[in-house]
Length: 510
Ligand SMILES: Nc1ncnc2c1ncn2[C@@H]1O[C@H](COP(=O)(O)OP(=O)(O)OP(=O)(O)O)[C@@H](O)[C@H]1O
Ligand SMILES: [Mg+2]
Image 1 (cartoon, rainbow, N blue to C red):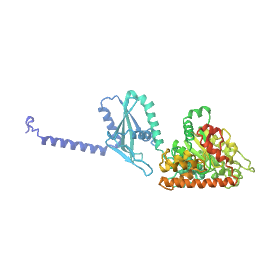
Image 2 (cartoon, rainbow, N blue to C red):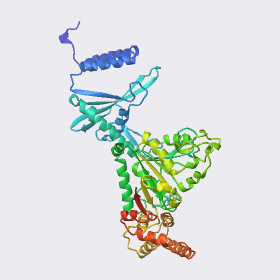
Image 3 (cartoon, rainbow, N blue to C red):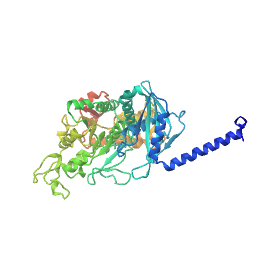
């Protein structure tokens, strides 16, 4: 018989006692796992946690991935997920999740389950924890449940709810905007798995990623004109309240005109890249009825640029006969632009009518819309469109100036704008007096990697162009306009240009 005081307290006895205790615990745990259903188990575990945790001054907000009906995404969860990627601190995190989809340009780094992230807002210390559990859905299928737990001192509850969480949402929106892949929508994009088609099959938009590299930095144009356009865009996007106050649709119209290859389409892309707006390229010739036009316009999104290129060509449509004769026509007596036409009249599409139509639609359901018309022949378009109040800004994209040449030479050949070189100076002088487009100059500069060879090629091209110009003059082509353009181009005062002859490079506000 053992007597207690004689009981040996050797290491082996302690070890065997511990082993039997551990075995019993494991047995109880696995029996509990077998016998107690998962939801009940997690409720019991949180009850124990609650009973045995000392009273805390902290409050924890739980932000689930889905709203309580389990159907729609919780906007706050998505925002937190994005926001927290900016708060990851590699030195304090133990595990991070890294991923990349084929369409993403960069790696996405996010936190792993159980990881915590600390944040500070107005001197409030906050702790985020990513919680990830496995459970069962209504059909007893295994499912993952994810949520964020946000813990902070109870006394800051109102501040967190009223200021911090809205700040998280705003920050996430900003990040999303920066990462946004812009889209180019048009009516001819193929409809496949990678493209989105909205607005129905007929008259629907297909989209591809907008990967046009043009930016205001790469655009060769008068610097003061460029500055004026950027300032106009900035003013437009920050004037939400102004448009509301005056009761106008929050939209701005630009008319870009000039010869082919002067950068009209590049300017539209630069505007889209600058504002992070999608582009909708609308071809009027593919629209066959009033209702189709309405549907197509209604399926464009806010923060977008609607472009109608070569309006002088689209306007050949204005002479088209009533479309009700077409079998596609779905409104036999109601034609374009919301104007009811008797079925025997000619239905004429005018751009100012189209603008009215768009104004009407966007006043009720459009925000931050830009509409751009481009044309090579301003003189051929409906004078009603040129009247003040129709298009807000008229921009003349004209022939290449000396300044534009310097920018192109810097972009294409890496030459500094103060490059001291007789050939460079010669080309600069030739450009100032020759009618050549930025597209033509760019093409010549691309012909050789060697700057001297490329400049020599461009000089030769410009000399040939000048001869052509002189020949055209001899044939009676009026050179007065070219001379005026060159004179005005050397004038950097945009307002003077604006007030001057609008046919030459410049910008006018209406
Ligand atoms: N102002 C410019 N700055 C920089 N590059 C330009 C400029 N204008 C034209 N280019 C170059 O020429 C190419 C054609 O220009 P773009 O398509 O923008 O001209 P466009 O005025 O729209 O011509 P079109 O009237 O034929 O539509 C561009 O891809 C670009 O490389
Ligand atoms: Mg173009």
